[in-house]
Image 1 (tube, rainbow, N blue to C red):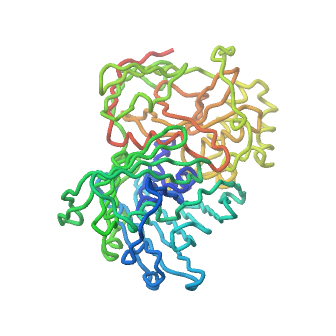
Image 2: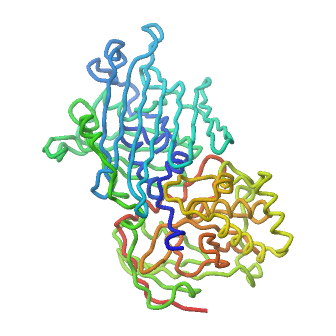
Image 3: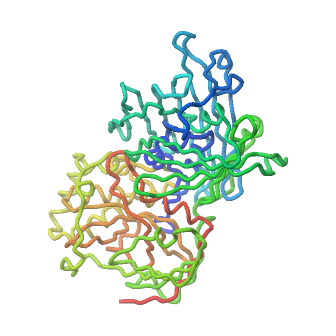
Length: 536
């Protein structure tokens, strides 16, 4: 059973595609950056950009020009992707004209290929996308396909009047969403288009917005051009304009990024500090030299820690979490089971108390949202196969607490094969393949619980295993008005105090993993000391 439960840090482009659906292509290469984030557990962007100034002069010399002639030839760009200092893949972007001069429009097409390892298993993710846009970069339609392991996801979008209609196809099911489309909404090259048309000056600030397909809302962004600085690019020092960007997502979560552009406005380098991801503009030959990376996105990102007692039998544990991450305390979930106390600027004290599935008597007073009780694209609790299994288990376990334990045990014995090359599978796919890691266990248990009239959601965070904390996903079920944690990768009838929670999500609709962004800020940034362990 070694590492059977370790799996949130997985190659699941499917996950982040659902959450970051437009934000990623606001600049070339950002799609690849968020694909890398998904490797740790990027969406098709239909990014829209709005400048502070309503009128922007157009240069006919740049790739983003509205002049017809510059589009006659295909313009192609390659970005080398790296994570934790190691090359892990590339992104190719091409822009060309389609149609004729009376109905001019352009096609943006590309692919992202990432290769890493998970528990020594080489994994590869390939994402291909295509968008038809006006010459000004306003979207008309797009398609995206993602291939990884057994998973295949498809995303189709089209503009109808002043609305964007998006269909997401997963496991044979289709979810449809409609969004209001701002008049100046840009397509795949959002911010890059603006820079091509009018490059920023040192000290200049621009504000724009990006349609977030996966979060049913708009991401607000603020770009601040700092100054020209010497930057190492492919072993050479180049003077580039540094632009710091702050994205505010729905729910007030924030993502910070830095890009460097040349005198023509071309984005040459990008960096995100959390996680430590970079993308650099390189020649095609350099990008294609990337072989399978030796970076292991399970073992190489774990957080070593030594426990003074047996955490697997503990109902309470106290931790000191150290790190200079802005807003670290806000990244941790708080409530009845977790309390956070500041000990200093860079250190927190976290107390975790677990509750078992019996004897709670409604003392928590928790309630479920409709999304935590209903079927969704990922949790198909209305599928006949899932309902039949839930009903058969309910015959031998009538009470909610005992039924929850029986469902956890069923998933533990059913998902037999550990497949670290799988993407984020839906519950129905897991039931058919009977393989996967922690995310597959979590969604199947969530589906069986909802089919048994027990509200459910998935939780994400860290779990202690063999002198280290690993990134992990498990399931929470509402029993006697208390959210109780269950881990079907272990099948122990609940969880212990060695689980540190950062967020949870109902996986409603096609908005999959909004609660999991905080985890991306932790990679290589924190240390954990286990101060006290208390048993039963």
